[in-house]
Length: 303
Image 1 (spheres, rainbow, N blue to C red):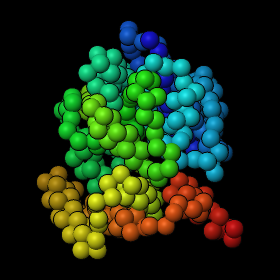
Image 2: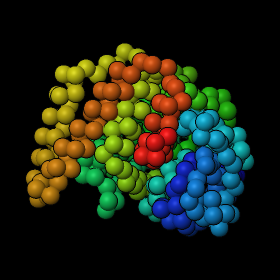
Image 3: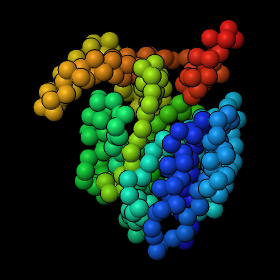
Image 4: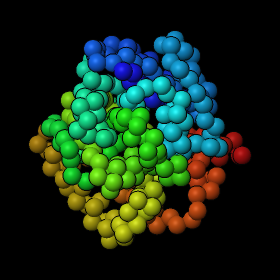
């Protein structure tokens, strides 16, 4: 059997070599491994690094990019019986990662798996709390509900071919696909042993845009979900209290309190903005959601 690891990239040189190095160290007697890069116009050393590790490379233009479309291009390009998705700024924590992630698929007990995410030394405190909540140290095979995350996930070529990723969403294409699978009688599983470090070195503006983009997408997945201004204040305050309580227990409160407030403000203000954005996705909005650093440069240069 062949497993294809699919990585979406755009200027991912900072962690890509470490990621590909860890992929090359994966141990499995069950299958062979290929790595596929789907690049959307990197201008740094991303493609050079990918070529040094003998990755197969395909491309998507910025104007055509969505997360789902990039993944579909990568899946179509890949030769694998099983398709593994990992972010260009995630690093497997051990050499059994891919075996653990794919094992439930190979057994036929699960249709779509996702693995644990943990922070590293640069991870913001509140994001670490988020990882603890959504990616616990125990597996759920199968799980209830359709939460899933393509920063660290796997699916069979057969299941992907049946459903494919939604190419119009601005995010949460993983949850949309998981919902389709479950509604058709399939199963989603969480594999805690298949863990990665997920590194978000983001500005506060990027944090806000990430949650705004996901909330905008959630409108199409769960249109019954509404996030009001009172909801913003309630979640903002309660999350600060919860994070602060944890920080006090860990004796890091004074060092982390400002970061906690800024993260949770941008988290929930972005969620509020995205839930209340009802315009059709324009090219400017796409650039805002998918390439925020490029938009900042354009604004700085007066474009």
